Figure 1 (spheres, rainbow, N blue to C red):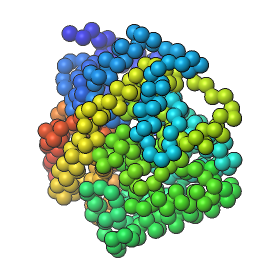
Figure 2: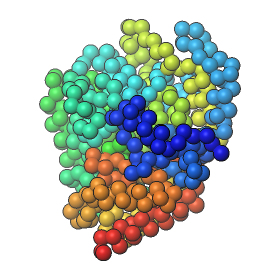
Figure 3: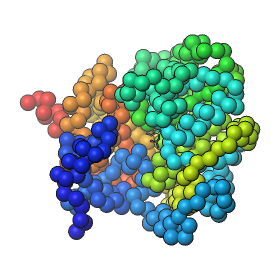
Figure 4: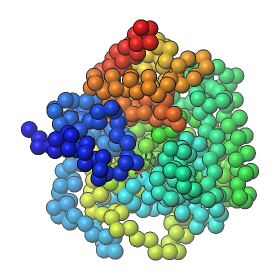
Amino acid sequence: KYESLPYERIVDIRQHHLSPALKTCYKKPLLLHQGHMQWLYDADGRRYLDLFAGIVTASVGHCHPKVTEAAQKQIGRLGHTTNIYLHSPIHEYAEKLTSLLPGKLKVLYLTNSGSEANDMALYMSRLYTGNFDIVGLRTGYHGASPYALGMTAHTDYKGGVANGFGCHSAMCPDVFGGIWGGSHCRDSPVQTIRKCSCSPGWCEAKDKYIAQFKETLSTCTSKKIAAFIAEPIQGVGGVVQYPKGFLKEAYELIRERGGVCISDEVQTGFGRTGSHYWGFQTHDIMPDIVTMAKGIGNGFPMAAVVTTAEIANVFAQSLHFNTFGGNPVACSVGSAVLDAIEEDGLQKNCEVVGTYMLKKLEKLRDRFEIVGDVRGKGLMVGVEMVKDKKTRERLPTDQMNLIWEDCKDMGLLLGKGGLYNQVFRIKPPMCITKDDVDFAVEVLQVALTKHVDRTLT
Ligand code: PMP
Protein backbone atom coordinates (compact mmCIF):
# COMPACT_ATOMS: atom_id res chain seq x y z
CA LYS A 1 0.00 0.00 0.00
CA TYR A 2 1.21 3.47 -0.93
CA GLU A 3 2.18 5.64 2.05
CA SER A 4 0.46 8.89 1.16
CA LEU A 5 -0.03 11.77 3.58
CA PRO A 6 -3.62 11.59 4.89
CA TYR A 7 -6.18 13.36 2.68
CA GLU A 8 -7.14 15.94 5.33
CA ARG A 9 -3.50 16.85 5.93
CA ILE A 10 -2.93 17.32 2.21
CA VAL A 11 -5.97 19.61 1.94
CA ASP A 12 -4.70 21.60 4.92
CA ILE A 13 -1.18 22.00 3.50
CA ARG A 14 -2.64 22.98 0.16
CA GLN A 15 -4.79 25.64 1.79
CA HIS A 16 -2.01 27.20 3.80
CA HIS A 17 1.21 26.65 1.89
CA LEU A 18 0.42 26.38 -1.82
CA SER A 19 -0.71 29.01 -4.30
CA PRO A 20 -4.37 29.90 -3.73
CA ALA A 21 -4.48 30.99 -7.38
CA LEU A 22 -4.23 27.36 -8.43
CA LYS A 23 -7.71 25.85 -8.52
CA THR A 24 -8.31 22.13 -8.05
CA CYS A 25 -10.82 20.05 -9.98
CA TYR A 26 -13.94 18.45 -8.44
CA LYS A 27 -15.82 19.13 -5.20
CA LYS A 28 -13.57 16.59 -3.53
CA PRO A 29 -10.28 16.85 -5.43
CA LEU A 30 -8.70 13.57 -6.48
CA LEU A 31 -5.63 12.44 -4.61
CA LEU A 32 -3.67 10.60 -7.26
CA HIS A 33 -0.95 8.16 -6.61
CA GLN A 34 -0.11 6.28 -9.78
CA GLY A 35 -0.44 6.46 -13.53
CA HIS A 36 -0.17 3.84 -16.21
CA MET A 37 -0.72 4.67 -19.90
CA GLN A 38 -4.34 5.93 -20.21
CA TRP A 39 -5.15 5.16 -16.58
CA LEU A 40 -4.79 7.03 -13.31
CA TYR A 41 -5.19 5.49 -9.87
CA ASP A 42 -6.14 7.38 -6.73
CA ALA A 43 -4.69 6.77 -3.30
CA ASP A 44 -7.50 4.27 -2.56
CA GLY A 45 -6.70 2.27 -5.70
CA ARG A 46 -9.72 3.48 -7.77
CA ARG A 47 -8.99 3.55 -11.48
CA TYR A 48 -9.92 6.40 -13.85
CA LEU A 49 -9.78 6.59 -17.61
CA ASP A 50 -7.88 9.84 -18.10
CA LEU A 51 -9.33 11.66 -21.09
CA PHE A 52 -7.61 14.88 -20.08
CA ALA A 53 -4.05 13.59 -19.83
CA GLY A 54 -3.04 15.32 -23.05
CA ILE A 55 -3.35 18.69 -21.31
CA VAL A 56 -1.67 17.32 -18.21
CA THR A 57 0.83 16.17 -20.83
CA ALA A 58 0.94 12.36 -20.68
CA SER A 59 0.79 12.31 -24.45
CA VAL A 60 2.16 8.82 -25.08
CA GLY A 61 0.74 7.41 -21.83
CA HIS A 62 1.36 7.93 -18.13
CA CYS A 63 4.73 6.45 -17.12
CA HIS A 64 5.32 5.07 -20.62
CA PRO A 65 8.05 2.43 -19.97
CA LYS A 66 10.31 3.69 -22.75
CA VAL A 67 10.20 7.27 -21.49
CA THR A 68 10.69 6.23 -17.86
CA GLU A 69 13.68 4.11 -18.79
CA ALA A 70 15.28 6.94 -20.78
CA ALA A 71 14.89 9.37 -17.86
CA GLN A 72 16.26 6.90 -15.34
CA LYS A 73 19.28 6.02 -17.47
CA GLN A 74 20.20 9.62 -18.18
CA ILE A 75 19.70 10.93 -14.65
CA GLY A 76 22.11 8.27 -13.42
CA ARG A 77 24.72 9.09 -16.08
CA LEU A 78 24.75 12.88 -16.39
CA GLY A 79 21.72 14.42 -14.70
CA HIS A 80 22.45 18.00 -15.55
CA THR A 81 24.84 20.32 -17.23
CA THR A 82 24.11 23.58 -18.98
CA ASN A 83 24.71 24.00 -22.67
CA ILE A 84 27.92 25.97 -22.26
CA TYR A 85 29.41 22.46 -22.60
CA LEU A 86 28.65 19.87 -25.22
CA HIS A 87 26.65 16.76 -24.39
CA SER A 88 25.32 14.22 -26.82
CA PRO A 89 21.58 14.08 -25.90
CA ILE A 90 20.79 17.66 -27.00
CA HIS A 91 22.50 17.11 -30.36
CA GLU A 92 20.76 13.80 -30.94
CA TYR A 93 17.46 15.41 -30.02
CA ALA A 94 17.98 18.55 -32.15
CA GLU A 95 18.62 16.41 -35.21
CA LYS A 96 15.69 14.10 -34.53
CA LEU A 97 13.10 16.78 -33.74
CA THR A 98 14.01 19.15 -36.55
CA SER A 99 13.88 16.26 -39.06
CA LEU A 100 10.15 16.13 -38.27
CA LEU A 101 9.58 19.74 -39.29
CA PRO A 102 9.14 20.86 -42.90
CA GLY A 103 10.81 23.58 -44.93
CA LYS A 104 13.27 25.93 -43.30
CA LEU A 105 12.15 25.17 -39.74
CA LYS A 106 15.46 23.70 -38.67
CA VAL A 107 16.87 25.58 -35.66
CA LEU A 108 15.90 24.45 -32.17
CA TYR A 109 15.81 26.27 -28.81
CA LEU A 110 14.86 24.40 -25.66
CA THR A 111 13.02 25.94 -22.73
CA ASN A 112 11.16 24.62 -19.69
CA SER A 113 7.53 25.55 -20.32
CA GLY A 114 5.14 26.57 -23.05
CA SER A 115 4.88 30.11 -21.69
CA GLU A 116 8.63 30.50 -21.87
CA ALA A 117 8.67 29.13 -25.42
CA ASN A 118 5.99 31.59 -26.55
CA ASP A 119 7.73 34.49 -24.78
CA MET A 120 10.86 33.63 -26.69
CA ALA A 121 9.01 33.35 -30.00
CA LEU A 122 7.34 36.73 -29.53
CA TYR A 123 10.57 38.38 -28.47
CA MET A 124 12.30 36.87 -31.51
CA SER A 125 9.59 38.18 -33.83
CA ARG A 126 10.05 41.76 -32.59
CA LEU A 127 13.80 41.54 -32.88
CA TYR A 128 13.70 39.97 -36.34
CA THR A 129 11.09 42.25 -37.90
CA GLY A 130 11.91 45.45 -36.02
CA ASN A 131 8.14 45.82 -35.61
CA PHE A 132 6.15 45.97 -32.42
CA ASP A 133 2.53 44.86 -32.67
CA ILE A 134 1.54 41.28 -32.00
CA VAL A 135 -1.79 39.84 -33.04
CA GLY A 136 -3.60 36.77 -31.75
CA LEU A 137 -7.14 35.47 -31.55
CA ARG A 138 -9.68 35.94 -28.80
CA THR A 139 -9.96 32.98 -26.43
CA GLY A 140 -6.45 31.92 -27.42
CA TYR A 141 -4.21 30.71 -24.59
CA HIS A 142 -0.47 31.13 -24.96
CA GLY A 143 0.84 31.13 -21.41
CA ALA A 144 1.12 33.03 -18.18
CA SER A 145 4.49 34.82 -18.49
CA PRO A 146 4.62 38.50 -19.45
CA TYR A 147 4.73 38.35 -23.28
CA ALA A 148 2.56 35.24 -23.53
CA LEU A 149 -0.01 36.57 -21.07
CA GLY A 150 -0.51 39.58 -23.31
CA MET A 151 -1.66 37.16 -25.99
CA THR A 152 -3.77 35.01 -23.68
CA ALA A 153 -7.18 36.43 -24.39
CA HIS A 154 -9.09 35.20 -21.31
CA THR A 155 -9.69 37.75 -18.54
CA ASP A 156 -9.69 35.04 -15.86
CA TYR A 157 -5.98 34.41 -16.36
CA LYS A 158 -4.92 38.05 -16.38
CA GLY A 159 -5.43 39.07 -12.76
CA GLY A 160 -6.22 42.67 -13.52
CA VAL A 161 -2.64 43.69 -14.29
CA ALA A 162 -1.94 45.34 -17.63
CA ASN A 163 0.26 43.03 -19.65
CA GLY A 164 1.86 43.31 -23.02
CA PHE A 165 1.62 46.61 -24.82
CA GLY A 166 1.03 46.26 -28.54
CA CYS A 167 -0.99 43.05 -28.07
CA HIS A 168 -4.18 42.69 -30.10
CA SER A 169 -6.76 39.93 -30.25
CA ALA A 170 -8.84 39.52 -33.39
CA MET A 171 -12.30 37.97 -33.36
CA CYS A 172 -12.07 34.22 -32.96
CA PRO A 173 -13.50 32.44 -36.01
CA ASP A 174 -15.60 29.97 -34.07
CA VAL A 175 -18.15 28.51 -36.47
CA PHE A 176 -20.35 27.11 -33.72
CA GLY A 177 -20.26 29.65 -30.91
CA GLY A 178 -19.38 32.71 -33.00
CA ILE A 179 -21.71 35.02 -34.84
CA TRP A 180 -21.22 33.47 -38.30
CA GLY A 181 -21.25 30.15 -40.07
CA GLY A 182 -20.88 27.41 -40.92
CA SER A 183 -22.17 23.94 -41.60
CA HIS A 184 -19.33 22.56 -43.69
CA CYS A 185 -16.47 24.83 -42.86
CA ARG A 186 -14.15 22.99 -40.57
CA ASP A 187 -11.68 20.18 -40.86
CA SER A 188 -13.43 17.57 -38.72
CA PRO A 189 -15.34 14.34 -39.29
CA VAL A 190 -18.26 16.11 -37.57
CA GLN A 191 -19.73 19.34 -38.92
CA THR A 192 -21.83 21.82 -37.00
CA ILE A 193 -25.61 21.81 -36.97
CA ARG A 194 -25.60 25.49 -37.94
CA LYS A 195 -26.75 26.34 -41.40
CA CYS A 196 -24.93 28.73 -43.71
CA SER A 197 -24.77 29.44 -47.41
CA CYS A 198 -21.29 28.03 -48.04
CA SER A 199 -20.57 25.97 -51.10
CA PRO A 200 -17.56 23.76 -51.85
CA GLY A 201 -14.46 25.96 -52.02
CA TRP A 202 -16.15 29.03 -50.60
CA CYS A 203 -16.87 29.71 -46.97
CA GLU A 204 -19.05 32.61 -45.98
CA ALA A 205 -17.91 32.53 -42.34
CA LYS A 206 -14.24 32.54 -43.32
CA ASP A 207 -14.70 35.68 -45.45
CA LYS A 208 -16.50 37.48 -42.65
CA TYR A 209 -13.93 36.55 -40.02
CA ILE A 210 -11.10 37.59 -42.34
CA ALA A 211 -12.77 41.00 -42.77
CA GLN A 212 -12.77 41.27 -38.96
CA PHE A 213 -9.13 40.21 -38.84
CA LYS A 214 -8.23 42.98 -41.30
CA GLU A 215 -10.11 45.45 -39.19
CA THR A 216 -8.07 44.44 -36.12
CA LEU A 217 -4.86 44.94 -38.12
CA SER A 218 -6.07 48.45 -38.93
CA THR A 219 -6.33 49.26 -35.23
CA CYS A 220 -2.67 48.43 -34.45
CA THR A 221 -0.02 50.94 -33.38
CA SER A 222 1.52 50.97 -36.84
CA LYS A 223 0.93 49.51 -40.29
CA LYS A 224 3.76 47.07 -39.63
CA ILE A 225 3.16 43.94 -37.58
CA ALA A 226 5.75 41.88 -35.68
CA ALA A 227 3.85 38.62 -35.37
CA PHE A 228 0.65 36.66 -35.50
CA ILE A 229 0.36 33.83 -33.02
CA ALA A 230 -2.39 31.20 -33.10
CA GLU A 231 -3.08 27.61 -32.14
CA PRO A 232 -4.18 25.44 -35.08
CA ILE A 233 -7.09 24.33 -32.88
CA GLN A 234 -7.66 26.32 -29.71
CA GLY A 235 -7.29 24.18 -26.60
CA VAL A 236 -8.11 26.19 -23.49
CA GLY A 237 -10.48 28.25 -25.67
CA GLY A 238 -12.71 25.17 -25.96
CA VAL A 239 -11.40 23.10 -28.87
CA VAL A 240 -12.26 25.83 -31.35
CA GLN A 241 -11.72 24.95 -35.01
CA TYR A 242 -11.58 27.73 -37.54
CA PRO A 243 -13.23 27.71 -40.95
CA LYS A 244 -11.04 26.15 -43.62
CA GLY A 245 -8.74 28.68 -45.25
CA PHE A 246 -8.89 31.23 -42.40
CA LEU A 247 -5.34 30.75 -41.12
CA LYS A 248 -3.93 30.70 -44.64
CA GLU A 249 -5.42 34.10 -45.43
CA ALA A 250 -4.51 35.49 -42.00
CA TYR A 251 -0.87 34.45 -42.58
CA GLU A 252 -0.86 36.25 -45.94
CA LEU A 253 -2.22 39.45 -44.37
CA ILE A 254 0.43 39.35 -41.64
CA ARG A 255 3.25 38.77 -44.12
CA GLU A 256 2.02 41.68 -46.28
CA ARG A 257 2.58 43.82 -43.17
CA GLY A 258 6.12 42.54 -42.55
CA GLY A 259 5.24 40.14 -39.75
CA VAL A 260 6.14 36.55 -38.97
CA CYS A 261 3.67 33.77 -38.18
CA ILE A 262 3.92 31.64 -35.05
CA SER A 263 2.12 28.35 -34.71
CA ASP A 264 1.54 27.42 -31.06
CA GLU A 265 1.64 23.61 -31.21
CA VAL A 266 1.65 23.14 -27.43
CA GLN A 267 -1.59 21.17 -27.66
CA THR A 268 -1.89 20.20 -31.31
CA GLY A 269 1.62 18.95 -32.08
CA PHE A 270 3.22 15.50 -32.14
CA GLY A 271 0.57 13.71 -34.17
CA ARG A 272 -2.46 14.48 -32.03
CA THR A 273 -4.60 15.67 -34.94
CA GLY A 274 -4.08 12.28 -36.60
CA SER A 275 -3.82 13.28 -40.24
CA HIS A 276 -0.61 15.28 -39.68
CA TYR A 277 2.28 15.49 -37.24
CA TRP A 278 1.79 19.25 -36.70
CA GLY A 279 -1.48 21.11 -36.43
CA PHE A 280 -0.39 23.83 -38.87
CA GLN A 281 -0.09 21.21 -41.62
CA THR A 282 -3.83 20.61 -41.39
CA HIS A 283 -4.31 24.23 -42.49
CA ASP A 284 -1.81 23.99 -45.35
CA ILE A 285 0.34 26.81 -43.93
CA MET A 286 4.02 27.24 -43.18
CA PRO A 287 4.83 29.17 -40.01
CA ASP A 288 8.12 30.98 -39.41
CA ILE A 289 8.27 29.90 -35.77
CA VAL A 290 6.74 26.88 -34.06
CA THR A 291 6.37 26.50 -30.29
CA MET A 292 5.87 23.21 -28.44
CA ALA A 293 5.40 22.04 -24.85
CA LYS A 294 3.21 19.65 -22.83
CA GLY A 295 3.26 16.41 -24.86
CA ILE A 296 6.83 17.05 -25.98
CA GLY A 297 8.12 15.52 -22.72
CA ASN A 298 5.18 13.30 -21.72
CA GLY A 299 5.04 15.23 -18.45
CA PHE A 300 8.71 16.11 -18.08
CA PRO A 301 9.11 19.91 -17.84
CA MET A 302 10.46 20.82 -21.25
CA ALA A 303 9.38 22.94 -24.20
CA ALA A 304 10.78 24.12 -27.50
CA VAL A 305 10.90 26.79 -30.16
CA VAL A 306 11.85 25.88 -33.72
CA THR A 307 12.54 28.54 -36.30
CA THR A 308 14.46 29.32 -39.46
CA ALA A 309 18.19 30.08 -39.68
CA GLU A 310 17.39 33.67 -40.81
CA ILE A 311 15.39 34.41 -37.67
CA ALA A 312 17.84 32.52 -35.44
CA ASN A 313 20.76 34.54 -36.79
CA VAL A 314 19.10 37.84 -35.93
CA PHE A 315 18.20 36.51 -32.47
CA ALA A 316 21.90 35.69 -32.03
CA GLN A 317 22.59 39.44 -31.75
CA SER A 318 22.27 38.94 -28.01
CA LEU A 319 23.53 36.13 -25.80
CA HIS A 320 20.86 33.64 -24.94
CA PHE A 321 21.26 31.37 -21.95
CA ASN A 322 18.80 29.09 -20.20
CA THR A 323 20.02 27.09 -17.16
CA PHE A 324 17.77 24.07 -17.52
CA GLY A 325 16.59 24.37 -21.11
CA GLY A 326 17.97 21.48 -23.13
CA ASN A 327 19.37 19.59 -20.15
CA PRO A 328 20.46 16.01 -20.89
CA VAL A 329 17.54 14.35 -19.06
CA ALA A 330 14.95 16.46 -20.90
CA CYS A 331 16.59 15.70 -24.23
CA SER A 332 16.72 11.95 -23.55
CA VAL A 333 13.07 12.03 -22.50
CA GLY A 334 12.14 14.07 -25.59
CA SER A 335 13.89 11.54 -27.84
CA ALA A 336 12.12 8.63 -26.15
CA VAL A 337 8.76 10.38 -26.68
CA LEU A 338 9.46 10.76 -30.41
CA ASP A 339 10.41 7.06 -30.57
CA ALA A 340 7.26 6.03 -28.70
CA ILE A 341 5.05 8.05 -31.09
CA GLU A 342 6.70 6.31 -34.03
CA GLU A 343 7.01 2.77 -32.62
CA ASP A 344 3.55 2.66 -31.01
CA GLY A 345 1.91 4.08 -34.17
CA LEU A 346 0.32 6.85 -32.13
CA GLN A 347 -0.36 9.36 -34.90
CA LYS A 348 -2.34 6.73 -36.79
CA ASN A 349 -4.08 5.74 -33.56
CA CYS A 350 -5.15 9.37 -33.06
CA GLU A 351 -6.72 9.39 -36.50
CA VAL A 352 -8.51 6.04 -36.21
CA VAL A 353 -9.62 6.18 -32.58
CA GLY A 354 -10.28 9.93 -32.70
CA THR A 355 -12.59 9.60 -35.70
CA TYR A 356 -14.32 6.63 -34.03
CA MET A 357 -14.88 8.78 -30.92
CA LEU A 358 -16.15 11.79 -32.85
CA LYS A 359 -18.66 9.66 -34.74
CA LYS A 360 -19.95 8.11 -31.51
CA LEU A 361 -20.19 11.50 -29.81
CA GLU A 362 -22.06 12.85 -32.83
CA LYS A 363 -24.82 10.34 -32.02
CA LEU A 364 -25.01 11.76 -28.48
CA ARG A 365 -25.28 15.24 -29.97
CA ASP A 366 -28.23 14.13 -32.10
CA ARG A 367 -29.91 12.47 -29.14
CA PHE A 368 -29.47 15.03 -26.35
CA GLU A 369 -30.74 18.60 -26.54
CA ILE A 370 -27.93 19.84 -24.29
CA VAL A 371 -25.12 18.54 -26.51
CA GLY A 372 -24.80 21.49 -28.86
CA ASP A 373 -21.68 20.70 -30.80
CA VAL A 374 -19.17 17.89 -31.19
CA ARG A 375 -15.95 18.86 -32.92
CA GLY A 376 -12.27 18.24 -33.22
CA LYS A 377 -9.74 16.28 -35.13
CA GLY A 378 -7.82 13.18 -34.13
CA LEU A 379 -7.67 12.99 -30.36
CA MET A 380 -8.32 16.68 -29.75
CA VAL A 381 -12.05 16.68 -29.18
CA GLY A 382 -14.60 19.12 -27.77
CA VAL A 383 -18.23 18.74 -26.73
CA GLU A 384 -19.98 22.10 -26.33
CA MET A 385 -22.91 22.02 -23.94
CA VAL A 386 -25.98 24.22 -24.44
CA LYS A 387 -29.27 24.92 -22.77
CA ASP A 388 -31.02 25.09 -26.10
CA LYS A 389 -29.68 23.87 -29.43
CA LYS A 390 -31.38 26.58 -31.47
CA THR A 391 -30.20 29.60 -29.51
CA ARG A 392 -26.87 27.99 -28.49
CA GLU A 393 -27.30 29.56 -25.06
CA ARG A 394 -24.71 27.82 -22.91
CA LEU A 395 -25.51 25.27 -20.25
CA PRO A 396 -25.29 26.89 -16.80
CA THR A 397 -22.01 26.11 -15.01
CA ASP A 398 -23.68 24.31 -12.09
CA GLN A 399 -25.37 21.86 -14.48
CA MET A 400 -22.17 21.38 -16.46
CA ASN A 401 -20.37 20.60 -13.21
CA LEU A 402 -22.91 17.99 -12.12
CA ILE A 403 -22.38 16.06 -15.37
CA TRP A 404 -18.62 16.38 -15.01
CA GLU A 405 -18.71 15.11 -11.40
CA ASP A 406 -20.99 12.20 -12.36
CA CYS A 407 -18.50 11.15 -15.05
CA LYS A 408 -15.67 11.25 -12.52
CA ASP A 409 -17.69 9.13 -10.06
CA MET A 410 -18.08 6.54 -12.84
CA GLY A 411 -14.31 6.52 -13.48
CA LEU A 412 -14.00 8.99 -16.35
CA LEU A 413 -11.93 12.18 -16.23
CA LEU A 414 -12.84 14.96 -18.65
CA GLY A 415 -11.51 18.50 -18.99
CA LYS A 416 -13.44 21.73 -19.37
CA GLY A 417 -12.69 24.77 -21.47
CA GLY A 418 -14.07 27.74 -23.36
CA LEU A 419 -14.47 31.29 -22.13
CA TYR A 420 -17.36 30.19 -19.91
CA ASN A 421 -16.21 26.61 -19.28
CA GLN A 422 -19.02 25.46 -21.52
CA VAL A 423 -17.05 22.81 -23.41
CA PHE A 424 -15.97 19.36 -22.28
CA ARG A 425 -12.44 18.89 -23.50
CA ILE A 426 -11.15 15.47 -24.44
CA LYS A 427 -7.40 15.11 -24.95
CA PRO A 428 -6.47 11.63 -23.87
CA PRO A 429 -3.10 9.91 -24.02
CA MET A 430 -2.65 9.08 -27.70
CA CYS A 431 -2.63 5.34 -26.90
CA ILE A 432 -6.33 4.97 -26.00
CA THR A 433 -8.31 2.22 -27.73
CA LYS A 434 -11.78 1.89 -29.24
CA ASP A 435 -12.80 -0.05 -26.11
CA ASP A 436 -11.84 2.97 -24.02
CA VAL A 437 -13.98 5.15 -26.28
CA ASP A 438 -16.93 2.76 -25.87
CA PHE A 439 -16.55 3.00 -22.10
CA ALA A 440 -16.23 6.81 -22.16
CA VAL A 441 -19.24 7.37 -24.42
CA GLU A 442 -21.33 5.02 -22.31
CA VAL A 443 -20.40 6.89 -19.12
CA LEU A 444 -21.20 10.22 -20.77
CA GLN A 445 -24.54 8.85 -21.98
CA VAL A 446 -25.45 7.73 -18.45
CA ALA A 447 -24.44 11.13 -17.04
CA LEU A 448 -26.48 12.97 -19.69
CA THR A 449 -29.53 10.75 -19.08
CA LYS A 450 -29.19 11.44 -15.36
CA HIS A 451 -29.12 15.16 -16.19
CA VAL A 452 -32.33 14.85 -18.22
CA ASP A 453 -34.00 12.96 -15.33
CA ARG A 454 -32.85 15.63 -12.88
CA THR A 455 -34.33 18.44 -14.94
CA LEU A 456 -37.64 16.58 -15.42
CA THR A 457 -38.19 15.93 -11.72
N1 PMP B 1 0.19 27.44 -25.29
C1 PMP B 1 -0.90 26.66 -25.21
C2 PMP B 1 -1.71 26.40 -26.45
C3 PMP B 1 -1.27 26.07 -23.99
O1 PMP B 1 -2.36 25.31 -23.93
C4 PMP B 1 -0.47 26.32 -22.85
C5 PMP B 1 -0.81 25.70 -21.51
N2 PMP B 1 -2.14 25.47 -21.28
C6 PMP B 1 0.66 27.14 -22.99
C7 PMP B 1 0.97 27.69 -24.22
C8 PMP B 1 1.54 27.45 -21.80
O2 PMP B 1 2.26 26.32 -21.44
P1 PMP B 1 2.86 26.19 -19.97
O3 PMP B 1 1.73 25.96 -19.03
O4 PMP B 1 3.79 25.01 -20.10
O5 PMP B 1 3.61 27.43 -19.68
